[in-house]
Amino acid sequence: MDGRMGWLLNDEGRLAIAVVIALALFSYGYNRWVGALERDSKDRGYMGLIVAFGCAVTIAGFVIWTGKVTEAGQILVCFVASGSFMIVGSMQRYVRSRAQEERDGQVEAQEALDDAKG
Image 1 (tube, helix red, strand yellow):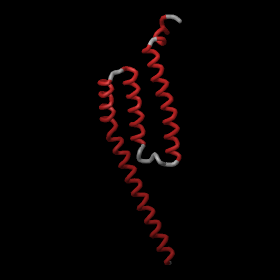
Image 2: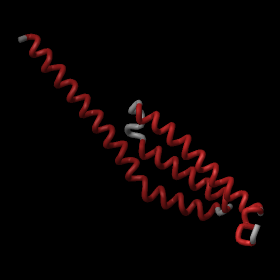
Image 3: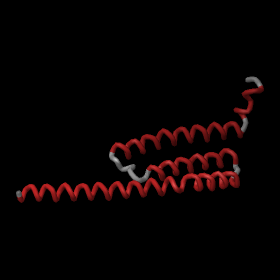
Image 4: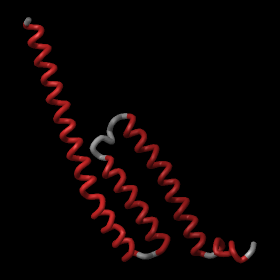
């Protein structure tokens, strides 16, 4: 093996490969789980948290690979700053949507009762 590929044989190279493989396996399993949630409409209102958790796993992979806990903390702070309003907003939109669906259902039920009374 030539010098360009020698890094794969050292501990750092093996750790890098292990972290990348672990993150890819996580991605595969997480995608299947999220797909199941979507099929059953159980992801509604939680997609922001689902995405945030995936980001947190990526940051954990970064820490394991590099050992740079301080930098990972800084990245986490940036993710929290850039994602918090999206997560809260997504949940608020879901709550409003559910409330509207409930109101629409009540209106339809009342109309059906009024029609039955004739």
